[in-house]
Amino acid sequence: MVGLLQLSPHTRVLLERPNIVSPPITAYDNQQECQSLNELDRIQDNEDRLYVEALLIRERILLPKKSERLFQPLLKRAMVLAERTEFDRCLNLLFHTFYLYQQMELRTGLHHFVWIFCRMLNANVPIRADHF
Image (cartoon, rainbow, N blue to C red):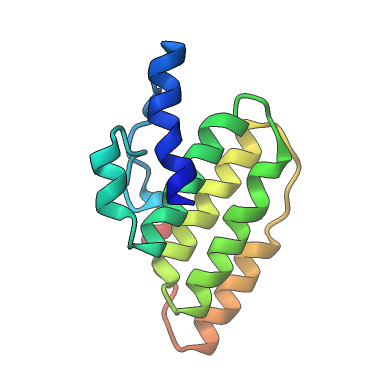
């Protein structure tokens, strides 16, 4: 995956296309898309950070196209975070995913939130009101 990511800066330079950088998003741990090969080199051994990099790239590409393919990796990542009992990160990602559904004017239910709240209650983790 790192090799593929390393092609992107070279391709952008050859095609004279600037990389559009989104502002930091809590759901992605306030990480931003790598802008240089040096930045990519620094994250190449960090599996979590590489996954976030892939999510950032997917969102940049698929959101303007209103592609529903954007959501499956986000929801999969939320499940992984819940399994690790990283509930705050999971909730941040689910809130962001819900926001993206709304932004793309797609219908969605609240079943993902019910699922994570059940997991939190099962683990005796309080559901903080400041999440809302």
